[in-house]
Image (cartoon, rainbow, N blue to C red; front, side, top):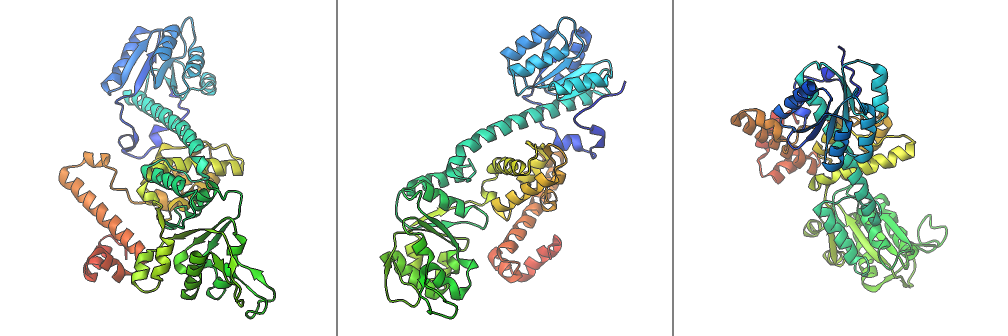
Length: 483
């Protein structure tokens, strides 16, 4: 007999694939349905020997009763049975439980039957006799994986509906719950808020959420990237200027603080402001007034200021490059935005959010992320944080060749990333000494890469941050070919 397999090809997988990618059979509830007692006992015995929680049914009516009464993950269902056919049982089972996955079994390699079963919602189609016991067990494990993935997707979508009340800020991890709590706490105050976090952590989204959930909603929200404005134009952009105040000032122009009157201004990358502008900003924060370049007139403004930075302003004060009085005026209320490394449990939620966004934008019906692809997403360090993840998912939607995001659709930097230290199950397959050596080497590599990244590639500075002398640091770089 030829096995008709509609969802995966075991033979095409690399050596060791079953051990590395199957989920544990413990806790997977399987219902085997077959009117032949010998076949029923044989399949049940195979699955029980591999740790599955197995129940059996000798016909369609009994099977539906178990599905309705018990929580079943996977049904192994014979296609040809007296009374109620396997296809009818399949349709009714799917109606009773959305999360149950069904694998059809038959002694006849009928392509038409396989197509009909898949159209009716079957996950897979196997022919009897099976090529091996492992074929059955592996099919059940993969079906259970898919069921859990679909269930997880459904719950993620429900969480997205809840979290989108904070705009497009996505996350349900403890660090993000603290952010939501802080947003709600400060939204109705007039105090200056300082948002601190790495690039790509969503500082502008949080600033908008503070504005939209406060009394200033409906009034202007003006985001300003201070680092993107030429140094000689920053003062004019923020506070305005009179005609003829400087070369090129052909007309009088109001600044962004005046444009934001009654609303909120976000000063992103506030640590990049030149010293002269720091002085004027301090006066504006203290007095609620601005003075246009070339004017002696003070103009009152009512503006809520939210500042954002990805640098350590306190360190900048200590180094003498940032005004201490301005720092304390900005740092009335501080909200720390966690990096994606600090909240890996939010990666699936964010990934599905961006999948839905870009699939809708491109008109593609892509609804799922394969388990292997999700593992790659969760394993990657995401130095660019949420912004990098969004770019990766946009690329994946463009590259996808089916309705499922596969590992090959992700950027090479993601799928080729070193295995994270948290992957412990693989280490259980090697002796203690080897496992320990792998963990230590993994730690050294990840630590050195991260400290080098934070030092902007400067080896001397990275060695100083790591507390190592330069020669030892270079030795580790050479060891892992990180030069």
